[in-house]
Length: 160
Image (cartoon, rainbow, N blue to C red; front, side):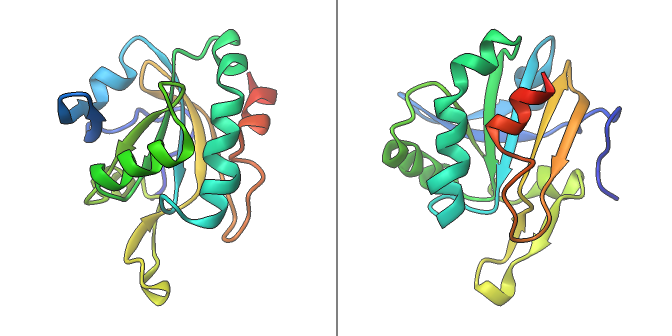
């Protein structure tokens, strides 16, 4: 069953890249006492994710933060090294926190996973965005398969 507005996000541990190497980030560290704009992509380096989704949040980061967002985070079912390389490729320098959900545990726990095996991708995340305040989902925007509309930074700005 997919998560919905009003639900508390589940406990999870993500991995992120730091100057010292890979480091865990718990859901408490990410969400507790903060307003978080979270978006998920089916995969780093995939066409829509690289051409539109991540660049949109990078471009609109200052506007999102001006509207009360403390942290902008991107989750993908990729490993931390792929996420680091994708961030470097995209010129991310702190605007967006890139989080690896390498085993897809968080993605499955919120019920937004899909089977991308027919594309050789295995289990992946659906494309979505949400706003969470202190770990509680305030808005949730899940894309239809193959779409990129409601999970964009521009759409989220209209919700704040």
